[in-house]
Length: 146
Image 1 (cartoon, rainbow, N blue to C red):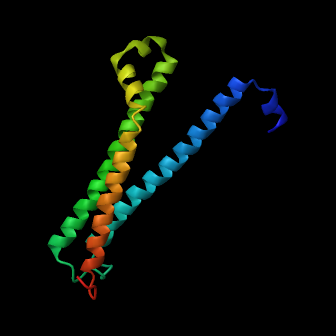
Image 2: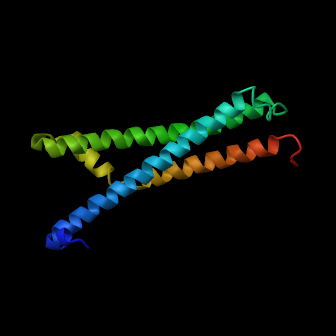
Image 3: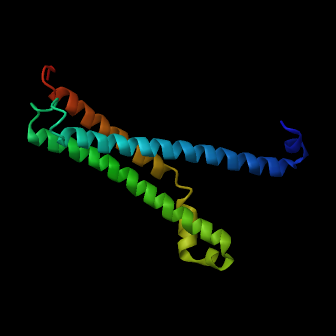
């Protein structure tokens, strides 16, 4: 612990640690969400693109099913990002404007911001639809045993 940290009160150190942990969490959250969205979009591009050639033998119905799965995952992540963006803006505004803290928007946002299960459900849903889509892609490749 640095000399400066030792001079801080225990409450100040705790608050500082909370901020540091949340910032670290938020960086991981953004990285995972970006990866999930990129994977879903990349999977769609790979299937739709005629240049790749590896999916020439895959029926258009199977391609459409796989693209729908990947798009569903991307939509789940974008919806979660938008919800988090709006909620945190309302909380930010409530901290800046004391009068806004009494509004329904602030109170609902403050409550929903504690519902971590929304993140978990969206991430598990995304991983599940990507897993099904990837499995369908691999069993559709020429030479795979169905």
